[in-house]
Image 1 (cartoon, rainbow, N blue to C red):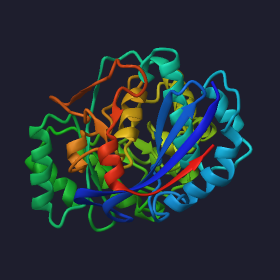
Image 2: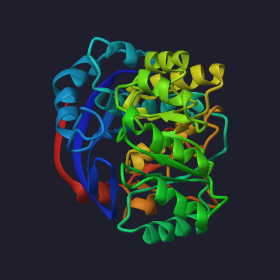
Image 3: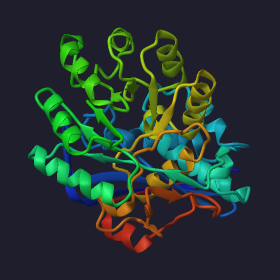
Length: 368
């Protein structure tokens, strides 16, 4: 295949409710859509997950546009490619910028799946017909409100709940949830809000039978996490610290975690995500697919990835209606009894809804 045309679209999507973590609040999501067309006219779609500010990683929406326009698109455009895995190698000379790489690589995977008449899940080697999903709940104004939000998600069938924590909003919040919902499959996500000086606080979380504590320490750390894991009964799940296969390999060897969250954008694309999955399967480290407030295109990629066999924990790929008044795909992603059906249609399995995309688009650029 050879990509002959790429269109970048900058969208702004209002969220149903603000989403608050230890590093800030998002009440509307800006994103870039990557539409790639090959020489036969087949179109593939990808989505960036970078935020407008460098809260989560150093990447932002503007930096991803810059990297795509000035480096990645010129590298890829008009290049003959036999398999999407080759995109990872083509982009290797460009340091990091994983979210930019993932967005365009995802569009190539979509084209490849269509060319080979497979669903994206099948093209990746996925085996599941449906995936089990959880839901992520942001910090709420009060613990009582948090519990009510959690109950509303339980009623919809979600298989586990993740809450955000930060210093001063942690042990007592979890204690209150456990008093009300003693058997809830529950995990907490700190988004790097703690240090080793907070070991006593984090050890108190061992009392609440949590599935895991996600990324308690620094975003680039695997050494202190190894120290912390030895002092906790609860598994640590690494998120921000894992940006590549090599990061995962080192973290596993050091004993820095018991679980790994795989996010396509954070690790640079589906090829690298699959490599990390395969490593964790061999090493018997459970994995799950995290969310980045994706719109429908990114959500479709997450579903396909999660169809791989070793995604044995529920991910964060909630249904479209959880975040959006209207999503940019047709049909929208629907959760039924805590499961999402894995599309068997060729490509990503969802059609971009161009009426909604055009309505939400604030700028467009074409490269050919």
